[in-house]
Image (cartoon, rainbow, N blue to C red; front, side, top):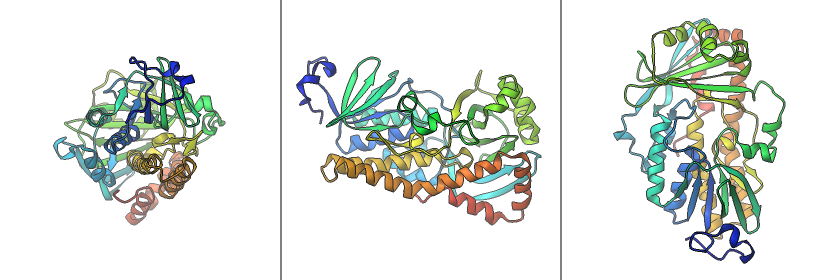
Length: 396
């Protein structure tokens, strides 16, 4: 479905090796969960899709690597054979306060653990099989709307598409170029975080995900495929600065104040020479459409990791975007109506979860509040189940 009727004045700028210009139905910027899942759906609908990713697959990402069961059927519909991948089925939640007090709770829906290294690689293969044109090691410098479509500017060459979707994650050079409000906001309690991830071998229940709190942060641990566990934590940039910008020192002096984390760091085998890190993480509110570009995944809105539902939100968001893009490309919607309907559906599905996540994030940023919270909720497990349900959805 690649068209070659682009305006002749732009023919040279977007010429293919055959001398014809390629105009894709959809251009997806960023190849994380949302981007890869969206590309597969659109390709299966018969559309020409190009996906541009700045890294080279497969690679590790900072991610808790826990997916709610609400995404199980959807991933299988994409072709991911989860039963054959030895993923860890997780049914229990463990939460500890900084002082070590702990509460255990069954998860209402449950989830499973799988590394992004394995899942992304699997989705890439499915996307290629479906006919998606995947460009790796390709940094996108800008996405420009110029009726009737978009120009995707990269360092190598430019591309044309009828629809453009940004799935590039938490923060990118495009956010800064467009001066999206969250990217230029003054530092506050929701926008100055860093994430750190390891894969480890350790002794921990395979059916449980734990959330261990420490001063100005929290650390999750859960089983993934094989004999590996994901250990991923979020903390403030201030904690690292207090540790002379030394991650190991921060883990020894701040994270290890929680006795559970002290034990994990002392007794686990680290499988990386160094952790995977990301900085300048923001949970501030974002818009779902910018310059006529549909934003999906973390680019549209990021839920706090302690809620454990970011991966499912990215996948669900891709399903919603695919449906609206399909209607637009079929001529059922104008571009303006597509944007409006996508924004409304996204807000209905996720806005309440994000608000709840921000409120919980503030609670767990305080050492004494976290200690008090664990002590208070321990006799009332229904309260934990209630909070979990506020940040999760139904199978889609």
